[in-house]
Length: 251
Image 1 (spheres, one colour):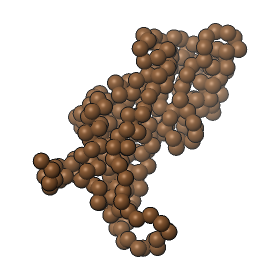
Image 2 (cartoon, helix red, strand yellow; image 1 turned 45 degrees about the vertical axis):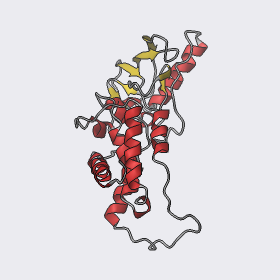
Image 3 (cartoon, one colour; image 1 turned 60 degrees about the horizontal axis):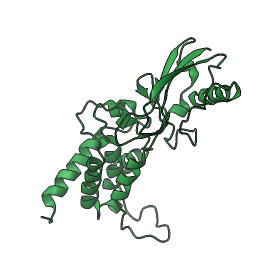
Image 4 (cartoon, helix red, strand yellow; image 1 turned 90 degrees about the horizontal axis):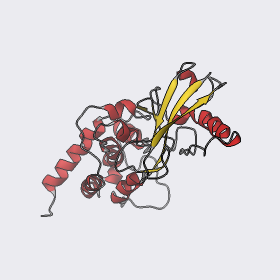
């Protein structure tokens, strides 16, 4: 398969970026998207065409979320429920032009080319603090009875990998789906109750302070999430936030 690649190149957050066009030929349809970029970089180096394209990756198994790229106008590309590393070239047509960009959001400044700084997500998680559940030996599985539905929903929320696709998909660069997933994974379980009120208020405040936009309920975040995190988490987070504000003893 042959492709024309329009790739965003940018030296750093302060530099002016631009699209550069490269041609690739003989790509296997079973090649993953990141493997295709590896082949491109080998060609750029071996033929002395340009510096290799910088992109983020680690596990290449859809676990870490580092590989997030904006491909033909969609986070992670044309497939549903996959990360960029799980996308294969058979999802494109021979001769296609593929446009590849980094996430576009003010809280995610470009480091170089297709790599963005997603440490804003780490700061939100850190703001959530800790749980005061007692540590030590592993308790019996039934020591704290938890309804199966709650346990399942908490596990589903915890499957968020923090890739940032929700932010990239949102016209306001909102992080509501990410933050609500991190709130929900604790709010649904008894171990997360002691700090619940402080946690949701502090995480939302940090999200706003970092410059993420507001949610306007277009649900693009849910549609593009590679882990299918549900928008019901946003509703749960809003309820947690309102209840916390109404019952807080702080002035």
